[in-house]
Length: 194
Image (tube, rainbow, N blue to C red; front, side):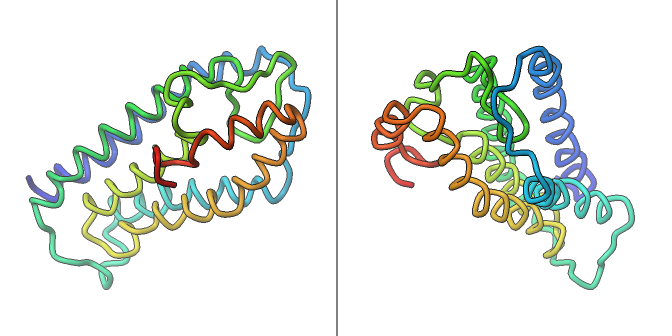
């Protein structure tokens, strides 16, 4: 595999991400919102993930900046990135489909919202974040630059670290003991582990 092909695969992963999400965004606009925590903090957290998974690596792929942080391109690492990339896209799609009308980009509780316990949500509460971490790991393997490669994991780590507790509190506020029992029976992002 060449570095150019690795960069194309990185871009294809992002394009796939957009294609998967687009129909869910359109459907979500039709569902009434009961509670929203979309504020400045939420905007900053979403921007950190966007910067890490798209803006910083896009600058690198398009311009080569910052070349001072390049590392040697290793084709075997780029080939190894296919597994987390495919896994990320599958998990991203599955988590959207399993959430159905409960899905939203930002922290929202919809009028007809319910605790989802089926599909990938049987084992983990936050599969979408897990898919972002897989996408960030694939980015690290595909892009031979310490900043551009690691930016995705850093951005997602910030989003996850500063958002999940707030999201879970919102769910407890909306669903009480139903969500508490679901939380006790599942892990955050890795089944049976974390």
